[in-house]
Amino acid sequence: QSALTQPASVSGSPGQSITISCTGTNSDVGGYNYVSWYQQHPGKAPKLIIYEVSNRPSGVSNRFSGSKSGNTASLTISGLQAEDEADYYCCSYTSSSTLVFGTGTKVTVL
Amino acid sequence: QVQLQESGPGLVKPSQTLSLTCTVSGDSISSGSYYWYWIRQPAGKGLEWIGRFYTSENTNYNPSLKSRVTISLDTSKNQFSLKVSSVTAADTAVYYCARDALRVGAAMVYWGQGTLVTVSS
Image: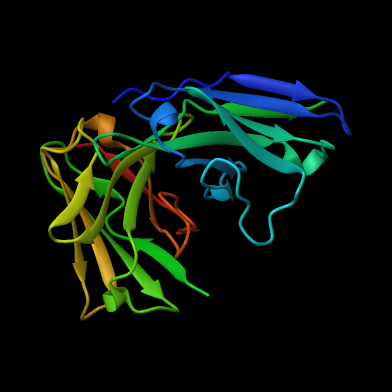
């Protein structure tokens, strides 16, 4: 299975909104509403921030939102804050009953 | 609150079998309601999904690793394990264990802190 495609880096100024894309195929992203997003700070374990395309776990800021159109899922961070600087990974269920991660996106707060 | 902790040798020789254990606290692994996952991350690189265990009849593996990987549960110790055979330097990574949650589909909610495994002679 091939990794989902994400931009290598995205940046924005504090207070701005940024969007990270995650492109797959109709055998993964496009075929199921099981896309999740993870935030990872350096040296730390990943943290789930979005599941089932657009749902936020309890305790995750509502500045994080997810959506999907066709084979592309998106994560939007609104009101960008310094603490949002991290790596972000999408993940999708696949037609083979496996999961596949995206290539990862480094978010920089300018 | 569920907590997971990986453990195992930090150094494995090429061609040998890598064996890691994830100890679960705060919940019983024998409840039968959850998927138990393994994920890895080479230094400076992205996350790679290794596989997950639900029951012995319902276990899924990354196709690129399937021939070398086994995930199993030890309910007596409240642990689950990962074995990767015939390792090479490409298997050097931080290995994470994780678990999902009820009403959270196909996502890893609880994570261990990760353990570094280096493959070298």
